[in-house]
Length: 365
Image 1 (cartoon, rainbow, N blue to C red):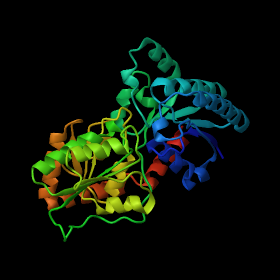
Image 2: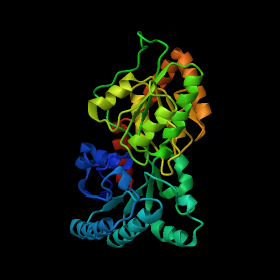
Image 3: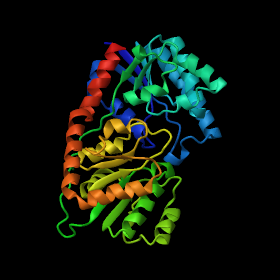
Image 4: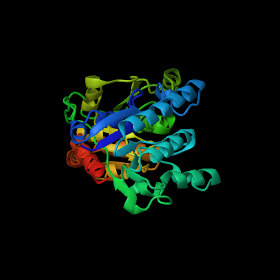
């Protein structure tokens, strides 16, 4: 049986790439097909810690580097799978790990859950590093729109595409009309409370909806990050949105599903620099909810504009408010969008689809 060493991000903290790492780590399909070992690349202790250098991280990195080298030498894998970072200090640390692994094992494949390379490729130093980094590498991307990020360094023959998938939720209900308040639009935002995820964009849209006479309830669900609880609640109070908008902090398990089950529409107006393929959109589609998001990363591969939801420009609360107003006034179209999104999820984005795609790629590599 072929041996694979997986060097990947695992939770905590919980975010898209670490959850995909957990799905791979727990996959019976992959673990039964290969002899597998796993090493975590995660250095951050929480969401706010991501991307912030520290002495503790530097020490942990040296330990991590030695551990990965030891695992590769002892295990002697046929293939090494790595989920590196694309830019900045995180890329520099992963550069040395990947170069070391390439010297130990000729077959290395990298799987990107972030982006930003094309915005750094004109920097002389980074350009030289990228040329060395991608030499003799196979690359897995989440979707075809993301190929532009590595096009300068990787030929199409060395690229595989593997859209993410998520496990089926046991507590999934598709939205029904609220008979007590039929005109009430239930809006859900679920993400870490990061400004560039569109936290303030949605709040501004809520202010416009209120001024336009729309009846709605907007729930923010997610761990506090660069948007903290006090600042958020002060802004809600200043805009006099206390009756319509509520933040709940981080929510997990059945409580998380319950928020999806109560929602009529899911909103993620993101302009997050590393946004590629938000798993939370797949969760919303699984629950039969239309999604509104932006043309960031490969989101246009997930949402079919006007069919399963809407794609809007980033930082455009007016257009977001218009789309929410439309969904409020057209419950039939809203339900049809959600149903189409559910069918697309079921046909493309379940965990079984993801595991099968990745298994085929690993066999090929």
